[in-house]
Length: 149
Image (cartoon, rainbow, N blue to C red):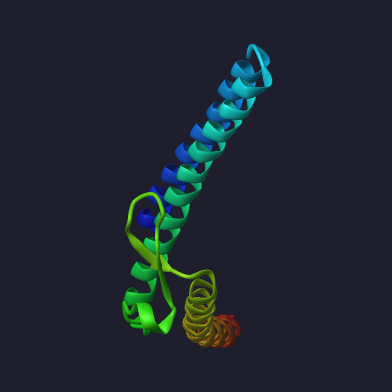
């Protein structure tokens, strides 16, 4: 659970950086002297945003792989020829392709759902047992209460 909070904080910081970049380059574009400067600023803004998008994808990819390992799911082996991995253009790190990411995310969701259903069935059984014990206790108290009067 703590890992999810940390991931959310990191993603929030990156989203804040994205907003600051948009605001900064909007101001710079308004003060540009000519179209050539505007085009250069637009390209630079685009590259910085792509760098943030790459960092977001890498964070999400690493998190998904950790969760898959936690649930003991099969992560595609790091093999270029299979086409499940791609190299980042900015950092050079490897990450899952969008198709492989979606497939692994589906497997994680299915495993979470299966585990949730197991716990849910246990909770239903415990609730039923608690109700039965409460009912028997109430019945015994009525029987003994009336027997003492």
